[in-house]
Structures are given as C-alpha cells and as structure tokens.
Image (cartoon, rainbow over all chains, first blue to last red; front, side, top):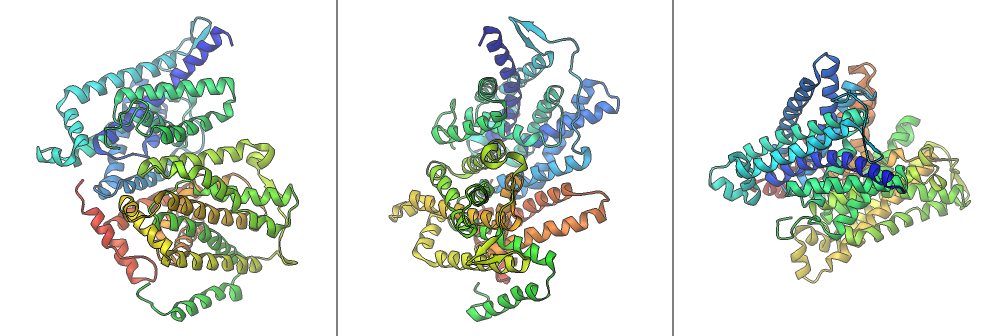
Length: 291
Length: 333
C-alpha cells in the first residue's frame, strides 16, 4: 500500500470518525449529566439531516437549514425527554434505556411516514473539488465535518468547565442528591441535556448528509457507532469521546480498505463487544468513576 | 396465579380456548395462532432470562435465526431427516450462547444491553454476508415438510397441533423451573447478585446456564419457524424481532402463561395494524406498525414502572404484583 493510499484511508477515517465523535459527544452530554443512556440519539441525527433537506427544498439558505434542523432537533430532544425519560426518572437504569429505544423506533417510523424510503442529497457547504494533499483527496465537506467536531468539542469542554450551567450538569453527574441539596434541579438538567444532545445530533446529521445522503434509517447504525465511540472514551469525558470517535473511524476505514467494505459495520460491532469485555470503563476512562 | 388456584380451573378453559381455532378456524386464524405459539416458545426462554434471572438480551432474534438456519441447512444441504434437523436446531444457538455468554453476562445494565444488541446485529450481518452457507439476503428455500414418525405435517391445522404442543410443553417446563431450587436461586440473582453470591450460589455459572437455556428455546422456535414457513432469510431475525421478543417478555411478566399472553398481544397487535392502518391512512403499511410498536414499548414500560400495570395485571391470571415496581419508582432521581 502506497503512502498516498494510506493517507487516503486516514482522511476518510478522520472524516467518518469526526461524525462518530459528534454523536459520541451528544451521548456523553446526556449520560455524563443525567446518567441516562439515550438510544434515540441516532434518530436525532437522521431527523436533523432530513429536516435540513426539507428546509433546503423550501428555499432556505444552507446556514438557515442547519439552524432550523438544530432547533427542530432540540425540540425533538425535549419531546423525547418529556415523553419517554421523565416519566421513568429514578427507575432502574434499564428502564429509560427501553423507553428511549421505543422512542427511537417510533421516530424512525415517523421519519418513514414523513420522508419515505427515498435517499435525499444535501449540497456540500462549500463548492469546489476535493483538496489534494500528498497524493490523497480530501473532500471539502470532510474539512467541514472535522471543523464541526473540533468546534463542538471545544465549546462543550468550555461549557462544562467554565459556565454555571455546565458546572451544574457536572454536579448532577457527581451526585444527584448533592446537586439537589445545593438547589440544582435534576429535572431541568435532564431537559437541557436532551435539548443539547438533539442539537449535537442534528449538527452531525447536517454535516454528514452531503457525504452519505440522508435516509430515514441512517440513524440506527450511526447511533450505535456514536455509543461505541462514547464507551471507548469512558462515557464521561468529552475528550475521550472525540478520541474514541476518531479511533473508530480510522479502524473502520483501514478495515474497509484492507479487508472488506461489506464487513465495516461488523468490525465496529466486534470492536464494541471486545471493548465491553476487556475494558468496560473505556480506553480513556478510569475505573474509579461510577459505571 | 393466586387468583385461580386449582389446576383444572385453568387447564379446562385453556384446552377449550385452544380447541376453538381447530374446530372453527380458517387458515388465516390458524396461521396467526401458529405464529403466536412459535414466538411464545422464544418468549418463554427470554422471560426466564429477563423476568426470573433479571438479565436482559436485545439480541435474542439472532438465536432464533441461528436455530432456523441450522435446521434449514441441515435439512436442505445435508439431507437430514426433518425431525432430526428440528431437534438439532437448538444446539447451534446454545453453543453460541455458551461461547459469548460467560464474558457478556459479566456486564450489567446498559453494558449488557449494548453487548447483546451488538451481538444480535453482528449475527444478522453474518446471515447476510455468509452467502455460501446462508444464501445471503435472498435466503434458503426448499425446506422439506416436517415428518413426524412417517406422518407428514403439511396443513395449518397439523402445524397448529405441533406448535401448541411444543409451546405448552415449554411453558410447563419453565413453570417447573421457576418453582425449583434453581428458579429460586435465579430469583435471588435477580434481587441481588452479591447477596446470592454470599448465599453460596454460583451466580456466573447459573446466569450462563440460563442464557444457554433461553438461547436454545429461541433456537427451537427458529427451527419451528423455518419448517413452518419452509424458507429462511435474514430479515425476520433482525433487531426489530429482538425488540418484539423483549416486548413479549416484558408484557407477559413472570406468570406461567405470560409468554403466550405477551406473544399473542404483540402478534395480534401487528395483525390488527396491518388491517387497520390502511383504513386510517390510505397507503400506510409497515411504517405505522413501527410507530405503534415504539409507542407501545414506551407506554407499557412507563406503566409497568409506575406500578399501574402491575396492579391491573394482578387481577388477571397473568402478571405479578405492582409492589416492587412502585418501590422502584419511588427512588429519587
């Protein structure tokens, strides 16, 4: 394999990896602050992409489409939280998993009713041919995807570290009872975490749609891969989620390039099983945290 | 169960109920009831795993598929007698469960959900990709008719008798398991693994055995399904089917008749939707079914968790009291 081919695989791995990172960040946002594993996350991605496509066909400029998709998915996130998560708040952790899974099935069916099975294309954010670097081609949309993941990571890390709301969410993660004692409502935290993960999911959907086409059923496998990345990152850290996403993207790209592209998803799933068995606290996680 | 104590009181109405489709049913009704029986077998295994041992599996359709494919490949490619192929169907999923079970069952809660979900999706992918054995997405056809001691099962009526016979035997076995020392040990594992360990129960091996048992039952159901449809393809054994099985187990609860009640509720609902959806929305098809499934899963889980469901079910022959669910929901967030 020539250096150019290797570089090509690295580019495509980093591009898909950035998408996984974005979804993983959304998973970390809800899990780290509320302890809820949101299995409907992938549907936010699909709905974000499809909503952007609809907004675009209504004649809105692309930035407005992205904003509309993010707003729509924030509402969707809150709707899922109100309908499926809040009623079972305080139940054993398995219960919200099943309810968010049910919500994801319903959302997928609704997307099928609204948009049908047809795949939709969204134009790339900026025109022009792919960038040529060292004998490998990087589509301009790939740069956008990576930039979006990097921006979201920085903003989220800053949000958790410096803002009052971010610190409140972190307090909920460390001890819900303690957070309540100092006047932080875990229910408000739940709402904001779901709205935020809706926005992040939509962002992932809008940036990936020009690369892969938007379909009603794109969410399931993207959501799973985002969770794989988040688990690899230890479920609690934004940096871990990003690294996990990039690692998964690179692993997939090299597996598809050297073994078989049909088994790409199988490799991600095997990686998940292997990871859970060997190091359930995540590659970058510490075992001292509550699992 | 406490509502109706005596055996004959339950057995006689059940026998009458089961005889009704045999006498008056047409092929459609018999076909639906055969499907209920097949899924009840798989749901019974999953119910032991979920409701008794407190573990969860979102990949049980994969075990059903492994059983179905094992029976189909043995009967079609290797020319095994159908009954022998059916009897061998549970072995492959049991073996698979034995291999993945020990490490996977160390996981708890959402890690277990994700691992079983990943396993199920992986096996489903392999059904599609291993074309040489499974025939890929187009599946394996030409599965011979089931022959039981020289008697060929061809009509719906004969399949009805066979599948319900198997289902009742499985239900009885699961009921006995529940009341045996093993069943009580499993309840202890459900309550607290640490406490069960402290009582001298080998929790790891017990969980593994339960997982293998439930996978074998799913495989038996898959084998019955393969012979009933006489065709296997990957699509009925995907994630959606796993969710359906979980829904059946959750709906049915831990009563002896639970798996049948759960399977009947889910399958009647999907048949009803297939009939009713086009009336409400012209041209509507599978998508409405998916929406209603998802919503049903959410509503039922919330109800069960709030204890309402438990109190309702306690009045019926199926289900257990709502006390423990109510206690679960009383914990602060």
